[in-house]
Image (cartoon, rainbow, N blue to C red; front, side):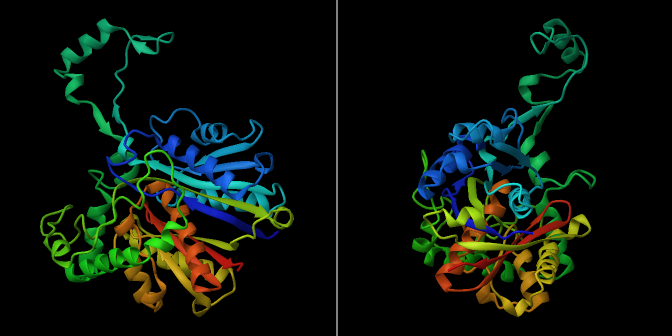
Length: 407
């Protein structure tokens, strides 16, 4: 396997749900970011051989979002493009595919990343079967009217509507009633007796670290149309406000809007290159990708999966946990990093040093690449050698990637 390098990684400032990017689709966000990323690095568009994009809620985006992004960013029609979906690990999967394309010698330069517009996730209408006109792609009006009358339903009242954000992104389809991931997280929290105070304290620390590192985080941001100056969801941390928030997923629960990740819109991307391509680049690569690791547990145990993915990727790289200088563990909910810290004996000072998704958002399909970009910059800033980025995902799994700083 040939070495694979991260030439550069960038993301846009994360938008709040219904916030700055509410009028932009996920494709809009990704196309603008990648166009700016290519111009920022000064790499030739003709050198990019593949564009690989992770995304979770793809309903309504139109055919082949990665290809749309490729064309709108000014890349060649001949450039390969593929879409990847693995819930919150989607953009890690796109990165792994791009990594393999280069490591096997098939390509020399690719763009990987993720996109998500949770604000624009559409409502889906269940299909009524009957007389269908393939020329107009619609049911005849008379049939539809009769069917609705028989069912005593009004389509404008949403009788048949399904929220794609819930069904494709936030709910586990393997359990009765399709519970949101927050309810499953609550069951894990009860089983492991994690107190509300511990969760709130972790959230306060995430906001505090993100606030202290605003200037450092800003170096990884590229601004597009309607971008906020910084991550839109960040707020000055206030212990009393965090403690005052009511539970959101169940009565007497411990998870709140203040100590859980934020619904968000965002895009993140990295340019991966071969050693051969690196020779001709003006910019020195940021990091080398060492290995990927996957893990899976029973679906309700999803927050424990990053711990196993970290162990797996360290073993694959033939390193020790002590060799790892920094960890980025996606803060879907606080137990994900808390389990890893406790079970692996990690120093809290090495985990999410610039805050995480609680403070700056979790745009599902973009989150893996988002924290990988953050890890690249944090390793350089702290002069560390090895770092691991990992995120859990619905279905009980997690993906981790281990990188080595090149500076």
